[in-house]
Length: 192
Length: 329
Image (cartoon, rainbow over all chains, first blue to last red; front, side, top):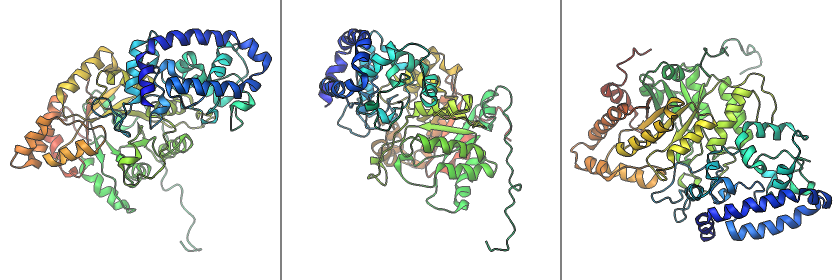
């Protein structure tokens, strides 16, 4: 729903304020999440996240949320699912090349970023989405990544992405995750 | 081939896999010309709907005399033609410099990384990373759009392959692809204010050169370039401005409404409509545009896209006088 996304972008600054605090709480809860078990939490939290972010951002549950770096405009709503937009086909007035009646998701993203304190993150080069993580909880992933001890165990593919996209790794670690993934977070058996 | 035919002679075509000269990433002719500070010319080839290599050479001939590299489009406008990798391989082996175009629309990261190695092995030294037009505007709108990568993550992917010698999976590449990395930019369309920042992102991702979409609006392009210079990008990347001869006012109007990402001011179309010979006027306009673009600081060359008017390219470049500063090889 474009109306939802327009609202989110218009209030990008307020959403940013809320999210910074929410994320801090998530990271602080990492020990608790560990005790309960990330694997056990995965499905219920993903369900809540889908409902909440669906209503607020028209979220598509890519599992690797970068809203803080895209002006609160969800890039998975771009018909080309660009993570580093906009493309070169934007129509006059900022409308989408593929869906001419829709405002370009990435024009909105740059507008939202201009309203945000950390809006400069839109300049970070984002890695391609790991399609195996679709449907999983990005909230839990952020908690795991930001709470993780440095020098934890990694594997070559994820390590390469994290090194090739260092700014995305620093600002949006869920987009280039390194912490071990719970079984239920992946539908292709990666990152166990 | 019959059973008593001699075994294939692999040594007959033995391309060298030389290390590029110092300060170069690929050593392609385009890269050398640009690094020497010359005004470079690239030209777009109209790919044939044919499997005959002669058709490729016929299309390339009028461009080869003036272009430092010939761009082989990758199903541009989502229309199916001979592949960019096929054309690039043929032309490279015949001694032409080519720009291998990769669109993210049709292939995923596995296919693309493999093709980059294949192209490099064939001798291709320049690559242009594109997101690609949506499938809906093409000749097969029912196709599944891929968009596994985007132009910027593709740039970073190939840079990682080239400079770190690994695939995105971390697996080692024994001989990394030596590619001069290109990207596109569209300075004259929305969001105008953010286009220079997106260019910065492409440079950050790994772009060595930029080929822009058509420039028909000099004031808008000049504003874009002013911002590019403020950001210091003209010192980090070579920018080739896109130009092309319009055939008529009608053709221009058709392009504007049917090809994604094309901005042609009304004044340009009026000028063609009023002309006695619109084709000739389109050519004159193109020459004037090149001369005006040349005066803008930070522009390193032009990229000529003369769709179905390739026969004019040599004349346009000669009359614009942009290559007088050097003897052509």
